[in-house]
Length: 164
Image 1 (tube, rainbow, N blue to C red):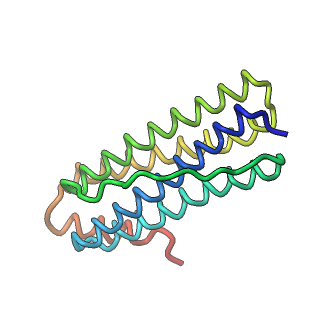
Image 2: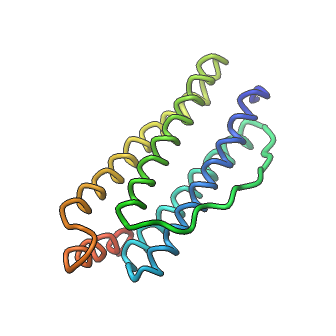
């Protein structure tokens, strides 16, 4: 069974993961409106991934006979200066989430909640990948610029995410 402090912290992280999904969905809409369907597709898939993260924690709380308490989400930003500004925000957001996951892990260690530590190790690894991917896209945007044919090629490359 989960301690109240761990349960409360995990419920807070569900909210944080769902906000990430909501933010990335908003970013997807911005990209679609900017005629960048590949960027929009990439962000929509990212939104789905964040929702999956929330559901992983949701299921974990229930498996540990805890109580899930969903919380209100803030309205996400809906306007962005450029694709570069958007992805810089993605990277900063992922770094913030990494800090949240690290804090949860530290709390699990302090509370001697070994199953939660093990569950959170997956998230720690996932956050490394999230930050790396956002950083790589920023590097590509730096190389190709934000206008012209190279941006359209990058848009097509991002559209390939999740394609079968």
